Image 1 (cartoon, helix red, strand yellow):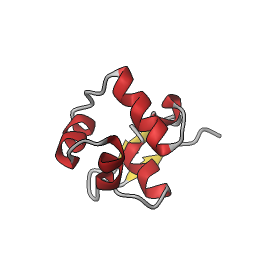
Image 2 (image 1 turned 90 degrees about the vertical axis):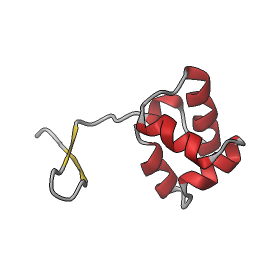
Image 3 (image 1 turned 180 degrees about the vertical axis):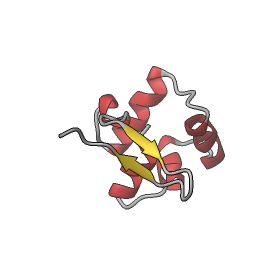
Length: 77
């Protein structure tokens, strides 16, 4: 999921997003971390971020650095 990344790109926090969705920030955080988002919820998030639902998902293969937790995007050449 790219929700955190999209928030950052738009200069907003997950707390800001939660306010736009009229839900508690902790509820949004738990739903994202557990990857338990219904289609309706995904549509609401996409609307709030002004993106398509498809944009909420990774399009490139990625890995997470085991040392720092940074997301590393892989590109085929």
